[in-house]
Image (cartoon, rainbow, N blue to C red; front, side, top):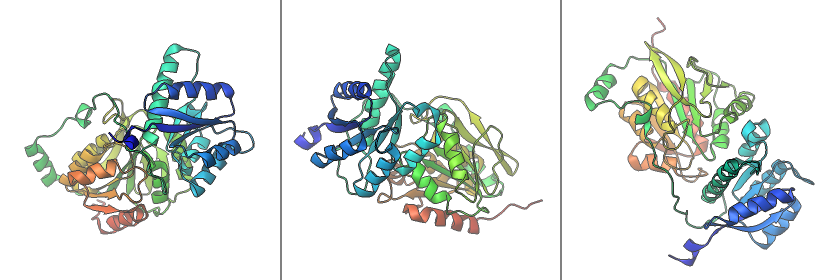
Length: 376
């Protein structure tokens, strides 16, 4: 092991509460892979700390004196990008402000630790330390980070846990007999996805085929995220509800804490919002959506895998391609974290690898050449 590989991840804590700074410092210092580089009560003090030493990760509150956290985040991302984790008392509420923070460049949002119960404090420790380790891997322009630490995590479940796999014979038969339907688009994203999805969706016309999205987000965040996008896009954007129709001009976002699957009745599509175990350590899972699209839509779909940590969606995108769907993956240069797309490319799941700025064009081109079902 080199000295660089052994170096701990340095964290800067920015919060106006001395008690929160102390608690966060204790939590981070107890992790063998992390260390507290320093603390700051407001963004101006944080800037002075950064001038002396650049941290690997910043934990940032939103409500701060002299300059609010969102303004500081935007300035930081435009001048000296550093991975930022928002640590807020409102993290569980999915507010528009926290969605705005994710769009401004924050890589994660975690709740502030509370000391009222031992279990909550333990859960906070695990969530905060995990967020710091993962944020340190984010690829932000102009930054060089230490090698990604090895994480000890629980065994991952595959999409088999939610949707039973098909035999090769059944899959081949389904591929040959899939009826022609209106085209649809399925998109998966994780870290960096809130900004990437916004950049893609705002470029799409209202006539675009129906779009289904899984963005890794906690409960209550997806509704606020959908409302925000709905105000920016020509397409209608909403958090998916069980039984929603998949229609041109409409984007359905899987609700946090639930899986979303495509359901076909004849030549028409709806979505089912269901419970189930975490798949690829996520709920909603991209693999679950993509498998349902492979089985339900086959050649009538386009699968797109955007920036994100881990490998959720890689196997599902391969299943979509094998079922006759068109498939895309975001390239490394434009990805905040080249994890999910990289794994899909390695599996041979992506027919094309393109930059973020080309994704909307590729979706529009797909819609233009995709055959439409007979309206009768």
